[in-house]
Image (tube, rainbow, N blue to C red; front, side, top):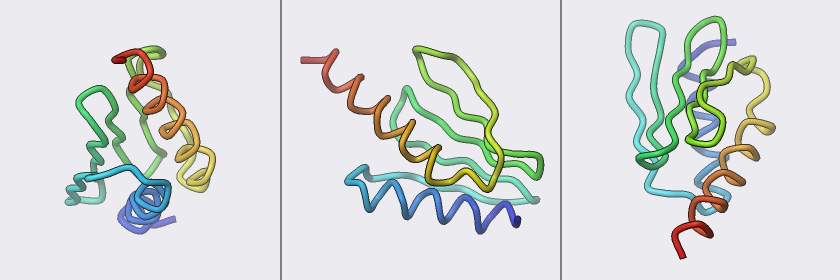
Length: 84
């Protein structure tokens, strides 16, 4: 799967779930999504790399867009709840 395509699909899935603004940058067959200060996703040809405060960095296949979006939404909700 194309890295840019996968990253744009992930961004669209996150925006559809109410997250935003989500900042995307692409170039040289890789890209990054900044969801918030604590949540960053790098996309490279071998997969997504998700960095969150509770787990650190985990790797996910580019085809797991829906599953990754759900992890990010849950992490964002947990961070929001902890900030209250």
